[in-house]
Length: 278
Image 1 (cartoon, rainbow, N blue to C red):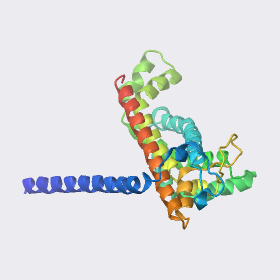
Image 2: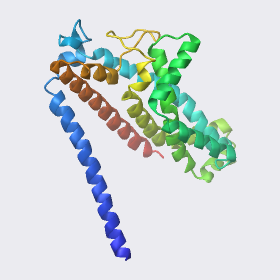
Image 3: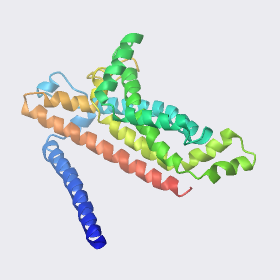
Image 4: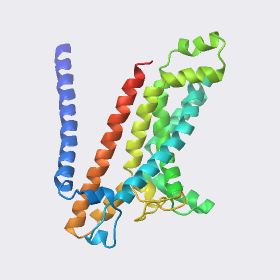
């Protein structure tokens, strides 16, 4: 009976893995097959020219730079908030206290809230404070979206840190600040993974920036200016009735996919490199 269960479990595991891998390869195949013919140097080196969404010349450089600005700013904001929160929940107070468990429950709830809700909430805040659709508004809204992801990802790693590692620096006379510096070093691989997950979620989301970052055909030079993003560029191009513009949407999707893959492999490389010193 036990052998039969093991065989069944192995079959289910292999089947699930093959299904996920096949789905990923199929998505990549569709994007590459439709996007590669429309890909050219202009797509990544020029901003949209007049009539771009009617099939005329130009590219999506504005959306590429805008996406990097939006996610880069949001990640910085999220790190500045998430790391102190995780440090407090795990190393300042008892990690299994009522407050810690309640806080983790709240973050899990925030984790599951749809991105469009964050977009609407961010838009409401912007109206309240008199902020127009801008790069700053998009950064803040994306930060609200990825903070729960980042906190829970880092928290899972911090929760597994042995108590002896926390007490050892203190036994040598280290202050709380010095102890936290040691612990942050131990959490660097987890922080890297959390940043990777956050970038993947933030850079591909359209709902959070639709009402908060706006859209423009130029590259923003100030945080108070609107900013384009690749997800919205793909959305607007797919909405065109012109086949050439629709193919450009798949080319934009290919650019976004390549960007995410580059970030993913880079983050994994540094995560592995940082793990050697732990």
